[in-house]
Length: 98
Image (cartoon, rainbow, N blue to C red):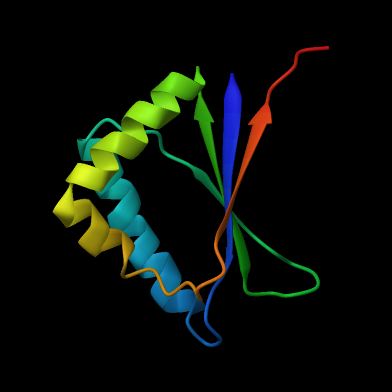
């Protein structure tokens, strides 16, 4: 299993707008049977940092979802409403049960 972390910073003063648009985005993802992330917000350091954590059984499942997203114009429109600044990063972790 794999965790995909999408990490970014929300524009100053836009956290309420982020949460509103995030609910709409997650609802759309559910209708498309896509992975639904946990959404984490920072409570120290930069308070407008956000981390979205997705879990996938395999990297190929993640790649399939990314391919679907690239073809879905409505998804892009909904996702673009989240007020991230331009510094979004993606981190991929392998989950180990040790």
